[in-house]
Image (cartoon, rainbow, N blue to C red):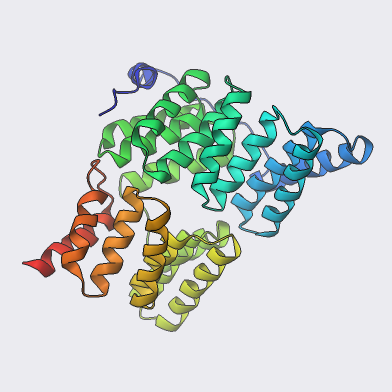
Amino acid sequence: MWKTLPLLAALLAVAACAPPQAATPAATQTSSLQRNAESLQAKLRRTPQDASAWAQLGSAHVELARVTFDPQHHSRAEKALTESLRLKPDGNGEAFIGRGALANAQHDFAAARDWGRRAVSALPDSAAAQGVLVDALTQLGDSEGESVALQRMLDLRPGVASFTRAAYHFELRGRLDEARGALERALESASSPDEVAFCRLHLDKLDGRTDESVEATRELASKVPSPEHLVRYGEALDKAGRSAEARTQYDLALRQLRALGGDDLTAALISADHGDPAEALRFAEKEWAKRQSVFTADALAWALHVNKRSAEALPYSDKAVSLGWRDPSVLRHREAILGSLR
Protein backbone atom coordinates (compact mmCIF):
# COMPACT_ATOMS: atom_id res chain seq x y z
CA MET A 1 0.00 0.00 0.00
CA TRP A 2 1.14 3.51 -0.71
CA LYS A 3 2.95 5.34 2.08
CA THR A 4 1.16 7.66 4.53
CA LEU A 5 0.84 11.17 3.14
CA PRO A 6 3.86 12.89 4.76
CA LEU A 7 2.80 16.53 4.52
CA LEU A 8 -0.69 15.74 5.78
CA ALA A 9 0.71 13.79 8.72
CA ALA A 10 2.86 16.76 9.69
CA LEU A 11 -0.03 19.21 9.39
CA LEU A 12 -2.38 17.04 11.40
CA ALA A 13 0.21 16.82 14.14
CA VAL A 14 0.00 20.56 14.74
CA ALA A 15 -3.71 20.94 14.02
CA ALA A 16 -4.70 20.55 17.67
CA CYS A 17 -2.72 23.61 18.72
CA ALA A 18 -3.57 25.77 15.70
CA PRO A 19 -6.25 28.38 16.52
CA PRO A 20 -9.38 28.15 14.35
CA GLN A 21 -9.68 30.85 11.73
CA ALA A 22 -12.87 32.86 11.77
CA ALA A 23 -14.97 32.63 8.66
CA THR A 24 -15.15 35.94 6.83
CA PRO A 25 -18.55 37.36 5.96
CA ALA A 26 -19.46 36.52 2.35
CA ALA A 27 -22.41 36.21 0.05
CA THR A 28 -23.72 32.76 -0.65
CA GLN A 29 -21.55 30.62 -2.87
CA THR A 30 -24.12 30.64 -5.65
CA SER A 31 -24.42 34.43 -5.82
CA SER A 32 -20.64 34.83 -5.63
CA LEU A 33 -20.13 32.40 -8.52
CA GLN A 34 -22.90 34.07 -10.51
CA ARG A 35 -21.33 37.51 -10.05
CA ASN A 36 -18.00 36.10 -11.18
CA ALA A 37 -19.60 34.59 -14.29
CA GLU A 38 -21.35 37.88 -15.10
CA SER A 39 -18.09 39.80 -14.67
CA LEU A 40 -16.31 37.42 -17.02
CA GLN A 41 -19.10 37.73 -19.59
CA ALA A 42 -18.79 41.51 -19.47
CA LYS A 43 -15.05 41.24 -19.93
CA LEU A 44 -15.46 38.93 -22.92
CA ARG A 45 -17.82 41.34 -24.61
CA ARG A 46 -14.88 43.78 -24.61
CA THR A 47 -12.12 41.24 -25.33
CA PRO A 48 -13.67 38.19 -27.04
CA GLN A 49 -10.25 36.79 -27.99
CA ASP A 50 -9.25 36.26 -24.33
CA ALA A 51 -8.75 32.49 -24.09
CA SER A 52 -8.04 32.66 -20.36
CA ALA A 53 -11.31 34.48 -19.61
CA TRP A 54 -13.26 31.90 -21.64
CA ALA A 55 -11.61 29.12 -19.62
CA GLN A 56 -12.43 30.87 -16.35
CA LEU A 57 -16.04 31.34 -17.47
CA GLY A 58 -16.28 27.65 -18.29
CA SER A 59 -14.96 26.67 -14.88
CA ALA A 60 -17.37 29.09 -13.20
CA HIS A 61 -20.29 27.35 -14.92
CA VAL A 62 -19.00 23.94 -13.82
CA GLU A 63 -19.06 25.22 -10.23
CA LEU A 64 -22.51 26.77 -10.69
CA ALA A 65 -23.82 23.41 -11.90
CA ARG A 66 -22.32 21.78 -8.82
CA VAL A 67 -24.06 24.08 -6.36
CA THR A 68 -27.35 24.66 -8.22
CA PHE A 69 -27.80 21.26 -9.93
CA ASP A 70 -28.96 23.13 -13.02
CA PRO A 71 -27.78 21.16 -16.10
CA GLN A 72 -27.87 24.30 -18.27
CA HIS A 73 -24.58 25.32 -16.67
CA HIS A 74 -22.89 22.22 -18.10
CA SER A 75 -23.79 23.21 -21.67
CA ARG A 76 -22.64 26.78 -20.97
CA ALA A 77 -19.37 25.46 -19.56
CA GLU A 78 -18.88 23.28 -22.63
CA LYS A 79 -19.35 26.24 -24.99
CA ALA A 80 -17.00 28.51 -23.06
CA LEU A 81 -14.26 25.88 -22.74
CA THR A 82 -14.57 24.95 -26.42
CA GLU A 83 -14.09 28.59 -27.37
CA SER A 84 -11.06 28.88 -25.09
CA LEU A 85 -9.48 25.85 -26.72
CA ARG A 86 -10.31 27.17 -30.20
CA LEU A 87 -8.43 30.35 -29.39
CA LYS A 88 -5.56 28.54 -27.67
CA PRO A 89 -5.48 24.82 -28.45
CA ASP A 90 -1.99 24.12 -27.09
CA GLY A 91 -0.76 24.53 -23.52
CA ASN A 92 -4.10 25.91 -22.34
CA GLY A 93 -3.87 24.61 -18.80
CA GLU A 94 -6.84 26.63 -17.53
CA ALA A 95 -9.12 25.14 -20.17
CA PHE A 96 -7.72 21.65 -19.56
CA ILE A 97 -8.61 22.02 -15.87
CA GLY A 98 -12.09 23.21 -16.79
CA ARG A 99 -12.67 20.34 -19.20
CA GLY A 100 -11.43 17.87 -16.61
CA ALA A 101 -13.72 19.30 -13.94
CA LEU A 102 -16.65 19.17 -16.37
CA ALA A 103 -15.89 15.54 -17.27
CA ASN A 104 -15.74 14.64 -13.58
CA ALA A 105 -19.07 16.38 -12.99
CA GLN A 106 -20.59 14.37 -15.85
CA HIS A 107 -19.05 11.15 -14.51
CA ASP A 108 -16.85 10.63 -17.57
CA PHE A 109 -13.90 9.81 -15.36
CA ALA A 110 -11.63 8.39 -18.06
CA ALA A 111 -11.91 11.65 -19.99
CA ALA A 112 -11.40 13.61 -16.76
CA ARG A 113 -8.20 11.68 -16.09
CA ASP A 114 -6.90 12.48 -19.56
CA TRP A 115 -7.76 16.18 -19.27
CA GLY A 116 -6.21 16.22 -15.80
CA ARG A 117 -2.96 14.80 -17.11
CA ARG A 118 -2.88 17.41 -19.85
CA ALA A 119 -3.53 20.11 -17.25
CA VAL A 120 -0.71 18.86 -15.04
CA SER A 121 1.64 18.79 -18.02
CA ALA A 122 0.76 22.39 -18.89
CA LEU A 123 0.60 23.64 -15.27
CA PRO A 124 2.76 21.35 -13.10
CA ASP A 125 2.46 23.66 -10.09
CA SER A 126 -1.34 23.92 -10.16
CA ALA A 127 -3.18 22.38 -7.21
CA ALA A 128 -6.42 22.61 -9.20
CA ALA A 129 -4.96 20.42 -11.94
CA GLN A 130 -3.96 17.84 -9.36
CA GLY A 131 -7.45 18.03 -7.87
CA VAL A 132 -9.00 17.06 -11.22
CA LEU A 133 -6.68 14.05 -11.31
CA VAL A 134 -7.41 13.06 -7.70
CA ASP A 135 -11.16 13.06 -8.31
CA ALA A 136 -10.92 11.09 -11.56
CA LEU A 137 -8.45 8.49 -10.30
CA THR A 138 -10.42 7.96 -7.07
CA GLN A 139 -13.51 7.11 -9.08
CA LEU A 140 -11.57 4.94 -11.53
CA GLY A 141 -10.16 2.87 -8.66
CA ASP A 142 -6.52 3.84 -9.32
CA SER A 143 -5.48 3.93 -5.66
CA GLU A 144 -1.78 4.46 -6.27
CA GLY A 145 -2.26 7.20 -8.85
CA GLU A 146 -4.83 8.96 -6.67
CA SER A 147 -2.47 8.93 -3.69
CA VAL A 148 0.41 10.41 -5.68
CA ALA A 149 -1.80 13.18 -7.11
CA LEU A 150 -3.25 13.93 -3.67
CA GLN A 151 0.19 14.23 -2.09
CA ARG A 152 1.27 16.61 -4.84
CA MET A 153 -1.88 18.69 -4.29
CA LEU A 154 -1.15 18.88 -0.57
CA ASP A 155 2.44 19.89 -1.29
CA LEU A 156 1.27 22.68 -3.57
CA ARG A 157 -1.66 24.04 -1.58
CA PRO A 158 -2.69 22.65 1.80
CA GLY A 159 -6.19 24.10 2.09
CA VAL A 160 -9.86 23.17 2.14
CA ALA A 161 -9.85 21.54 -1.31
CA SER A 162 -6.84 19.32 -0.57
CA PHE A 163 -7.73 18.52 3.05
CA THR A 164 -11.28 17.43 2.20
CA ARG A 165 -9.91 15.16 -0.53
CA ALA A 166 -7.42 13.77 1.98
CA ALA A 167 -10.29 13.08 4.38
CA TYR A 168 -12.04 11.06 1.70
CA HIS A 169 -8.80 9.22 0.95
CA PHE A 170 -8.56 8.15 4.58
CA GLU A 171 -12.26 7.35 4.92
CA LEU A 172 -12.11 4.94 1.99
CA ARG A 173 -9.31 3.12 3.77
CA GLY A 174 -11.10 2.87 7.11
CA ARG A 175 -8.74 5.35 8.77
CA LEU A 176 -11.47 7.40 10.36
CA ASP A 177 -9.35 9.23 12.96
CA GLU A 178 -7.11 10.54 10.21
CA ALA A 179 -10.14 11.41 8.07
CA ARG A 180 -11.60 13.36 10.98
CA GLY A 181 -8.27 15.14 11.52
CA ALA A 182 -8.11 16.14 7.87
CA LEU A 183 -11.64 17.55 8.01
CA GLU A 184 -10.83 19.47 11.18
CA ARG A 185 -7.78 20.92 9.45
CA ALA A 186 -9.99 21.83 6.48
CA LEU A 187 -12.41 23.55 8.85
CA GLU A 188 -9.57 25.62 10.30
CA SER A 189 -8.57 26.62 6.76
CA ALA A 190 -12.11 27.56 5.72
CA SER A 191 -12.51 31.22 4.79
CA SER A 192 -16.22 31.46 3.97
CA PRO A 193 -19.48 30.37 5.59
CA ASP A 194 -20.03 27.93 2.71
CA GLU A 195 -16.71 26.21 3.33
CA VAL A 196 -17.37 26.07 7.08
CA ALA A 197 -20.81 24.53 6.50
CA PHE A 198 -19.37 21.99 4.05
CA CYS A 199 -16.68 20.86 6.50
CA ARG A 200 -19.08 20.63 9.44
CA LEU A 201 -21.60 18.65 7.40
CA HIS A 202 -18.98 16.06 6.51
CA LEU A 203 -17.61 15.93 10.04
CA ASP A 204 -21.13 15.22 11.29
CA LYS A 205 -21.58 12.49 8.68
CA LEU A 206 -18.27 10.93 9.65
CA ASP A 207 -19.28 10.94 13.32
CA GLY A 208 -22.79 9.64 12.57
CA ARG A 209 -24.48 12.77 13.91
CA THR A 210 -26.67 13.55 10.91
CA ASP A 211 -30.32 14.34 11.63
CA GLU A 212 -32.47 12.04 9.47
CA SER A 213 -35.85 13.45 10.51
CA VAL A 214 -38.36 14.47 7.83
CA GLU A 215 -37.98 18.17 8.59
CA ALA A 216 -34.17 18.13 8.72
CA THR A 217 -33.83 16.19 5.45
CA ARG A 218 -36.49 18.35 3.77
CA GLU A 219 -34.58 21.50 4.72
CA LEU A 220 -31.30 20.02 3.50
CA ALA A 221 -32.83 18.92 0.19
CA SER A 222 -34.36 22.38 -0.32
CA LYS A 223 -31.01 24.09 0.31
CA VAL A 224 -28.86 21.59 -1.59
CA PRO A 225 -31.11 19.62 -3.95
CA SER A 226 -28.58 16.95 -4.82
CA PRO A 227 -29.69 13.39 -5.67
CA GLU A 228 -28.13 12.21 -2.39
CA HIS A 229 -30.17 14.67 -0.32
CA LEU A 230 -33.37 14.00 -2.26
CA VAL A 231 -32.98 10.29 -1.54
CA ARG A 232 -32.33 10.97 2.15
CA TYR A 233 -35.50 13.06 2.27
CA GLY A 234 -37.39 10.29 0.51
CA GLU A 235 -36.13 7.70 2.98
CA ALA A 236 -37.21 9.88 5.90
CA LEU A 237 -40.66 10.17 4.32
CA ASP A 238 -40.76 6.41 3.86
CA LYS A 239 -39.98 5.84 7.53
CA ALA A 240 -42.81 8.25 8.41
CA GLY A 241 -45.24 6.19 6.34
CA ARG A 242 -45.49 8.77 3.55
CA SER A 243 -44.58 6.41 0.71
CA ALA A 244 -46.21 8.33 -2.14
CA GLU A 245 -44.29 11.49 -1.24
CA ALA A 246 -41.12 9.42 -0.88
CA ARG A 247 -41.58 7.99 -4.37
CA THR A 248 -41.77 11.54 -5.74
CA GLN A 249 -38.35 12.33 -4.23
CA TYR A 250 -36.76 9.16 -5.64
CA ASP A 251 -38.15 9.89 -9.10
CA LEU A 252 -36.92 13.48 -8.87
CA ALA A 253 -33.44 12.26 -7.92
CA LEU A 254 -33.35 9.91 -10.93
CA ARG A 255 -34.55 12.66 -13.30
CA GLN A 256 -31.90 15.00 -11.95
CA LEU A 257 -29.17 12.41 -12.49
CA ARG A 258 -30.20 11.99 -16.12
CA ALA A 259 -30.39 15.76 -16.67
CA LEU A 260 -26.89 16.27 -15.27
CA GLY A 261 -25.36 13.78 -17.67
CA GLY A 262 -26.18 10.42 -16.13
CA ASP A 263 -24.72 8.92 -12.97
CA ASP A 264 -25.44 5.23 -13.43
CA LEU A 265 -23.87 4.28 -10.10
CA THR A 266 -26.20 6.42 -8.01
CA ALA A 267 -29.11 5.47 -10.26
CA ALA A 268 -28.31 1.80 -9.61
CA LEU A 269 -28.43 2.29 -5.85
CA ILE A 270 -31.67 4.29 -5.98
CA SER A 271 -33.31 1.70 -8.22
CA ALA A 272 -32.07 -1.18 -6.07
CA ASP A 273 -33.52 0.31 -2.88
CA HIS A 274 -36.57 2.13 -4.20
CA GLY A 275 -37.32 1.03 -7.76
CA ASP A 276 -36.84 -1.77 -10.26
CA PRO A 277 -34.18 -4.40 -9.35
CA ALA A 278 -33.65 -5.34 -13.00
CA GLU A 279 -33.07 -1.68 -13.89
CA ALA A 280 -30.65 -1.38 -10.95
CA LEU A 281 -28.59 -4.25 -12.34
CA ARG A 282 -28.51 -2.71 -15.81
CA PHE A 283 -27.26 0.58 -14.35
CA ALA A 284 -24.64 -1.15 -12.18
CA GLU A 285 -23.31 -3.37 -14.97
CA LYS A 286 -23.05 -0.37 -17.29
CA GLU A 287 -21.02 1.54 -14.70
CA TRP A 288 -18.82 -1.47 -13.87
CA ALA A 289 -17.90 -1.75 -17.57
CA LYS A 290 -16.47 1.79 -17.35
CA ARG A 291 -14.68 1.66 -13.98
CA GLN A 292 -13.90 -1.00 -11.40
CA SER A 293 -13.71 1.03 -8.20
CA VAL A 294 -14.89 0.21 -4.68
CA PHE A 295 -17.95 2.38 -5.39
CA THR A 296 -19.03 0.45 -8.45
CA ALA A 297 -18.20 -2.83 -6.72
CA ASP A 298 -20.65 -2.01 -3.93
CA ALA A 299 -23.36 -0.89 -6.37
CA LEU A 300 -22.99 -4.03 -8.48
CA ALA A 301 -22.94 -6.29 -5.41
CA TRP A 302 -26.14 -4.72 -4.11
CA ALA A 303 -27.86 -4.85 -7.49
CA LEU A 304 -27.02 -8.55 -7.83
CA HIS A 305 -28.28 -9.21 -4.30
CA VAL A 306 -31.66 -7.54 -4.83
CA ASN A 307 -31.97 -9.67 -7.96
CA LYS A 308 -31.49 -12.75 -5.72
CA ARG A 309 -27.98 -13.47 -7.04
CA SER A 310 -26.10 -13.14 -3.75
CA ALA A 311 -23.45 -15.75 -4.53
CA GLU A 312 -22.41 -13.67 -7.54
CA ALA A 313 -22.60 -10.52 -5.42
CA LEU A 314 -20.12 -11.63 -2.76
CA PRO A 315 -16.86 -11.14 -4.74
CA TYR A 316 -17.93 -7.60 -5.58
CA SER A 317 -18.83 -6.96 -1.95
CA ASP A 318 -15.36 -8.22 -0.99
CA LYS A 319 -13.80 -5.70 -3.38
CA ALA A 320 -15.95 -2.87 -2.01
CA VAL A 321 -14.35 -3.23 1.45
CA SER A 322 -10.90 -4.26 0.23
CA LEU A 323 -9.29 -0.89 1.02
CA GLY A 324 -10.94 -0.67 4.43
CA TRP A 325 -14.02 1.36 3.47
CA ARG A 326 -16.61 1.05 6.24
CA ASP A 327 -19.45 3.27 5.06
CA PRO A 328 -22.66 2.26 6.92
CA SER A 329 -24.61 1.62 3.71
CA VAL A 330 -21.79 -0.51 2.31
CA LEU A 331 -21.68 -2.54 5.52
CA ARG A 332 -25.46 -2.90 5.44
CA HIS A 333 -25.27 -4.23 1.91
CA ARG A 334 -22.51 -6.64 2.86
CA GLU A 335 -24.32 -7.93 5.93
CA ALA A 336 -27.43 -8.64 3.86
CA ILE A 337 -25.43 -10.46 1.21
CA LEU A 338 -23.57 -12.57 3.75
CA GLY A 339 -26.77 -13.25 5.66
CA SER A 340 -28.51 -14.61 2.59
CA LEU A 341 -25.64 -17.05 1.99
CA ARG A 342 -25.57 -18.56 5.48
